[in-house]
Amino acid sequence: NAGVTQTPKFRILKIGQSMTLQCTQDMNHNYMYWYRQDPGMGLKLIYYSVGAGITDKGEVPNGYNVSRSTTEDFPLRLELAAPSQTSVYFCASSGGLAGRNEQYFGPGTRLTVT
Amino acid sequence: QQPVQSPQAVILREGEDAVINCSSSKALYSVHWYRQKHGEAPVFLMILLKGGEQKGHEKISASFNEKKQQSSLYLTASQLSYSGTYFCGTEGRGGADGLTFGKGTHLIIQP
Image (cartoon, each protein chain N blue to C red):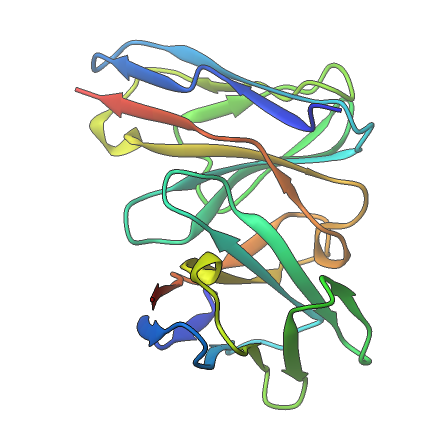
């Protein structure tokens, strides 16, 4: 049982480039989330999904897109990368409503945009 | 709205106790606690639900005052492994849309 896996672990992008952060979970969880964490700050929700084919915006969705074609995968797309998107990105999943269930986090992707 | 945590940082000797507080300006239905070590992912500690239900690790103690919209995490007889940053999280609008986390409390345990 691998839990939540994320790739890549590290990435450096040039301004204006695009990339996809991959997230996969093997726990058959319907609920999945993308957070970003800036230094000294808590995690901020970017997008979330309550099941395959259903996604919605979180607190800081601008500059990002997501898709959920399967229960297992929840990729995050960065279009036209900007320095403000330099952050650590965490994917998480839960077996039920976020408010009432433990969230399992992936190891994170550290992204630098220069 | 982001919950407010206090203190921002704590330095303890091994064996000492600590209390970390979390307060919100909005009505809370649940409070979550996570610990994150440097360079690692957050790890679940506990959920406290409105009505008194708790889910989490037996060795962790916490309280949830629904009327005051506050929660406290109690770390007793601290061990070196307790070091890290502790985050409280509150649920979103409908309970499904992720958590809103505080800025964290940095805990350093010295031998």
